Image (cartoon, rainbow, N blue to C red; front, side):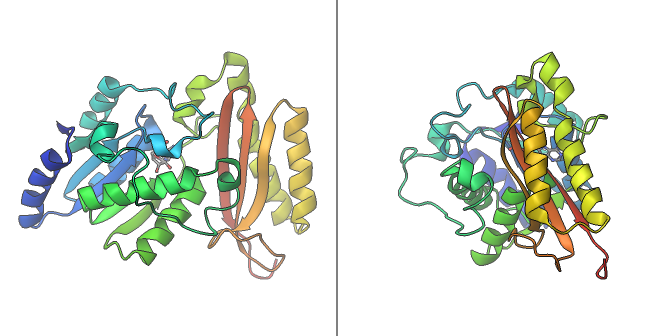
Length: 286
Ligand code: AMP
C-alpha cells in the first residue's frame, strides 16, 4: 500500500490507473479504524480493481464544543490494518492540504432539508462540513464507486442526494453496520466509554430492536413509542438527543402507511455521543 499526503501525489498514480482501465473504489474515513471500516474496504476490494482509503479528521464537521481535539489519531495502526485488508492507496492529507484557503473557504456544499433534522438539528454545521469535504475528496480521488456505512444513516442519505444532484459520476454503496457481539455498533468513539458505560451502551441497540418489534406487532403510534423509548433511555443514564421513526427513503417522519422504515437514535452516555439505527421493511398489509 502506498501512502500519499498530498493531492497531486495521489492524483498522479490514480490518473495512470484510470488510463489502464482500472476501476477505483473509495472509502473515506476519519481513521482510528475498526472492523466496521475494514468491512467497507473489503467490499470495495471485491468490487473494484483498486481501493483508495482516506484518513482525514475533518475540522469543519466538528462543532466548537465537540471532540475535534481529542478525536483518536492512530495513523500507524490504521495503515497496518488497511495494508492487511489489501487497500492500495492511503490518502492522509494535512488540513492545510485540504483547505489551502483556510478552514473558512468560500465554497461549501449544503444539502437542505435532509441535513436539517436529527443529527443536523443537534450538530449545527456538521453535515455542511461532511458534504463539503466528501465533495472535495470525490474530486480528488474521482472514484467509480464510494463506500459508506449505514451506521451513519443520515450521512449516507445526504451523500446519496448530493451525488445525484451534483451529478458526480460515482456509485454510492451503503454497507451494513458491523456490531460487537452484544449489539453495540462499532465506532471510533466507543473508545471514550468507561468500562461501566461500555456495559450500558448496548442498550441503544436493544432499544432499536424493541421498537422494531413493537412496530412489527402492529403498533403505529410512533410519537408515543419513541417518547417512551426516550424516557427509558433517560432513566437508564443516557441523555438522548432523539429517537425517531422515519421513512428509510427520504428520512421524512414515518406515517402509519409507510412500510420501508428506519428508527434512528442519538444519545449521550457520559461524554460519548452514540448514534445507531435500524432499517426494516413492514409487509405492505401489516
Ligand atoms: P468515520 O471514520 O467514523 O467517519 O467512518 C468512516 C466510514 O465508516 C463511514 O462511512 C461510516 O459510516 C463507516 N462506519 C463506521 N462505523 C461503522 C460500522 N460499525 N459498520 C460499518 N461501517 C461503519
